[in-house]
Amino acid sequence: MRFFYFLLFITLRISVPFYYKRRIGVNSPKQFYGRTIYVSNHAASFMDPLVVAITFRPIVFFMTRSDVFKGLLKPVLWAAHMLPIYRQLDGDDTKGKNEAVFKRCSRILSFGRNLLIFGEGFTDDVFIRRLKPVKKGAVRIGFMALEDMNWKKKVYICAVGCNYSEPSKMQSDLLISASDKICLNDYKEQFLENPNHVINTLTKRIEKLMQEQITHVENKDWAPFHENVMMLTRKGMNADSHDDSIPLKERWNYSRKLALWMNEQDLDNNEELVKLKKETEGYFSLLKRFKLQENYVFDAITKKSRMKEFLFLIFMWPFALIGILHGIIPYIVTKKFAEKTFKRRVFWSSVKMMMGKLIWGILNIPYIFVFYHFIYPSYWLGFAYFLLIGPLFSLIAYKYMLNFQSYKRKGVVGKMELSKFIAKREELLGKIKEVIEVA
Image 1 (cartoon, rainbow, N blue to C red):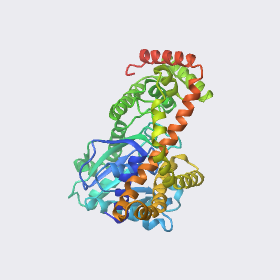
Image 2 (image 1 turned 120 degrees about the vertical axis):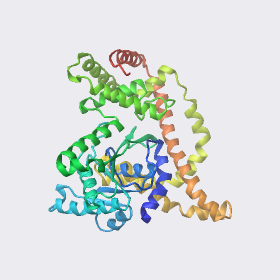
Image 3 (image 1 turned 30 degrees about the horizontal axis):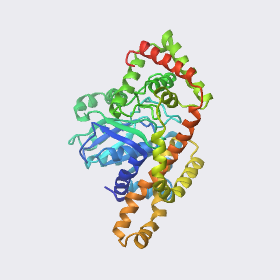
Image 4 (image 1 turned 180 degrees about the vertical axis):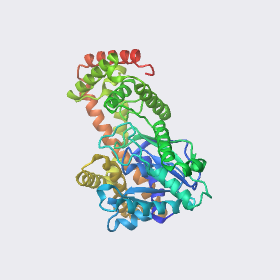
């Protein structure tokens, strides 16, 4: 394990739980080594390798787009176990450069290490719960490694699914699921006879396994309807509208079952579903026009009190104030840098988390000495404060800001006449239960 990878592995185990409130792994591999190629979906760009690496125990080498390997970043990326993958838009001799990288991958696998490859190849600009077509590179690399090792060692391939409630939303949820491994050695005879056929067949199998690890809405035009149904039923993976008492794994299963049911329907020719889709779109468009959120309507139905937010604001302000002192500058700097530098929003969350962690760490080092001189004369306790209490207070400050905004908005909403919204919501829920079998 190279030093920077080790450093990331340790520090991300502290920072990622701050970013994602609930984070679990399903069927997570337990071995550090294993000569396995993990093929994952690519829902959140730079965030995906970070969360997979710290959720799974295996030590992995990442396949990363080559255009980030520039200047001083090269040795850093090397130390973080990253390998470049070249695309056609990256210039001449793409195939030759990739062949050289694939040879390095073979060497990595021969030493018992693992690879993490994002089979789709790119991330959508707008987060959508579906899998794009999977490329053949992962399977090719596996068989190339076996040929280089004269088939004397076993090489495995495994499908991975990153499931975010919302990748760019801090304090949202994350579930990462892995399939059972496939041993490529079992296909030796077929590969020697017809390599292209075996590569195509296994790629399709991996694609199917990857779809089973995530919520996969086959028809992307219906993905917003899937999201709307989850929000209204409050059972699925939506970040804002869900029932917190339902375990994350159950919400993930509901989200997948709903998508599977939709995939089995002739959506565009089902009059009931088309009508229901239009009605839900109309409902959410109306909410947007009045600057309302669906969970505010739900709170009005359940007559949910604002007391919880009020008590949080009353009792947590001293801790939030300390958190602001620790975190306000890193928050503003990283937010402005990420949103100004990267035009695609999919990069923002990972850049903010990584850059924010770095800037926060640098700017908060003086607090170790402040603690020593003004609170208690122990550098060990000062360092513990820097490592644990400071980040905790920064998180409290962030939650304080969200609670304050929510408290104010709910106060405004509480004065609005919501009876028509409530009636429409109840009507839609009734139709959803009638039309959708798994709802």
